[in-house]
Amino acid sequence: MYSPSLLRRFFCFNSASSSSVTTFSSTNSKKMSLVFFGSPQVSATVLDALFNASAAPSSSFEVAAIVTQPPSRRDRGRKLMPSPVAQHALDRGFPSELIFTPERAGEETFLSSLRALQPELCITAAYGNILPTKFLNIPSLGTVNIHPSLLPFYRGAAPVQRALQDGVKETGVSLAFTVRDLDAGPVIARERLEVDDQIKASDLLALLFCKGSKLLINKLPSIFDGSAKVNAEPQDDSKATLAPKITPEESWLSFDEEALVLHNKVRAFAGWPGTRAKVLVVDDKSSNHNVLELKIITTIVRPDYKIQGNDVNDITFVKGALLFPCGGCTALEVLEVQLPGKKVITATAFWNGLRGQRLKTL
Figure 1 (cartoon, rainbow, N blue to C red):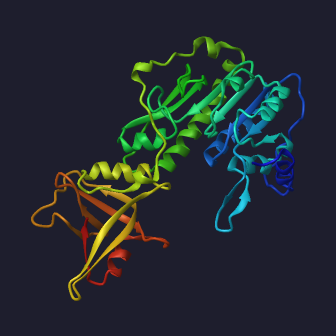
Figure 2 (figure 1 turned 90 degrees about the horizontal axis):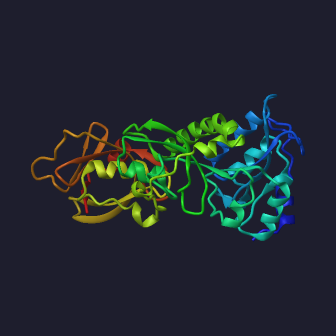
């Protein structure tokens, strides 16, 4: 756990060299006080929109503070680094002493600091921490969350990944008031989006939070004047579906499933935890058999393609793709792979590296 003094020292480094610096006033009694909660890079998109909107001459609010996850050790050097949201705020010239990084949002020292700010509204966007009831009682206008699904569908930690895994053709982003139950609050607004069958989770997540930030800025006036709460639509809990957190154990591909199911899983789990497969490398000259672990990076599916003949376990190479036989006589075309500890390579480069050895699914 990080002490407040350590965090202040950690965040007090010079950000004056940033090419995009925003001037923030410490107090402005005429403006609504808003506190932003977020952590990953997609959250920084929302924060940036709030910074820009608050800087407009006609703005009725100011970002009074930012709450984000504590610094973590990242990259090869394992250096202690601020969250992407904290770093973005510092780059924009936001006061470091107004960036809070509690381990848990229910910590009394943090809640005392939040109460002292007397925020009218809190905004959450992929914050990554459970908000207790004693927190929800602090902002006078409540807490509003940007959730990347069409609520009540896909409530939970991984809405985008689970939606792609299910092969949905449409998703969207919802703006909803936060209640104690998970993602169950009244919905202020939704925006729908058609889903391309090749888009990966990271790209879809970024797109949805971009749309969500615009939706938030558009609805802020009605949130501040109270009409959004009056007109918010209660969710139909009977239609709710869950989007539980993804585990590393789910990353394995089983080729007895149909190709489209596997393709959807590959794009859903892209980035983290990724999707893995074990294949058998057969050397006919030496009669050696080796099991190889591959990370499957990019795939496509041709619905009209069917595996024919005796090649039900043979992985072949056709027009720049590794052709994996799958359940229902379907085929998954793998365009990019990654060996453990190596860089991502094309299927062509991988196939050439086999030097005549054969591949089979396990």
